Image (cartoon, rainbow, N blue to C red; front, side):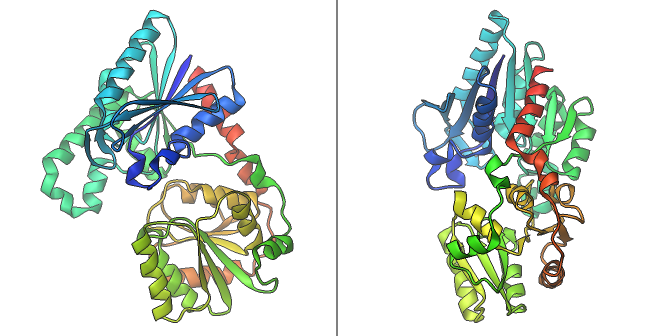
Length: 387
């Protein structure tokens, strides 16, 4: 059996250091995790990149990466690489000739490249798994962004492609109840499951709260509310800052990067409003990130839109209660025991939830987080491949 993880969009749309992102993105992490727990399996990771002029091959941790150039790239998800499509056709022929099972694991399927891959494949020796990354179907995008009515024929064509082609998908990993309901309608014969990214064993190691605070130079007696994610409007940053203004006795730690202009906008907002209990800490990774999760009193994620945020899994592994909005897969992940669900775009709900959660007694959430370990996720995924 050969497994190919396929990313559907250029990394350079979301990060400056796109070559580094080849090995950090979801499709790559699945590839590395498969190889970690099943060294015997043949796994490759393929992606397209508008900044690359020539095809590249890179070997990393036993996984072969193939990067294909794309000349048609209107925006994220609306990209086509004919080099990648040609390579898939060759893989299908080769698998048929050698009587080898071929699994194409497509990452984010609301995309042009996915439509073309599905159009190329026949349901013989090729099996297709499609993984949702939080995107929306064409008509859902049309409902959200009214300006798309200007290109309605194109949106209608994309929706037709999904209605017609998604029936070829054997298994879909979705990230929300809404997405699952949509898939049941247009692809009733596909298996539909809730499946997320994973977290490492290291997340479950207990770190003493006082020790973590000392390492981070945080006050041992203060209450800390932690945010981890990109600093951008759709993450609910303005509402979070407004809530901080109304909770002067609590410190707010904002961990994450983003577009420089947008970060500066919010830093200036804090200065203008004289909000003294907010710190922008920039991007934090690895052990330092786990220290922040161990040192804080709750995690907050006030996003307008999400998939299934990894940071929620990491917080649960650290027994850190969570406040998060009722979007994407969050209501599936967070129940009464793990945290409080709030409406998006409501500073008042953020304030009330923080006041409530900070008086909670300690709860054991680690057990709930066990199912998000990479090993658990990969074993279930391999079972699906083998079926």
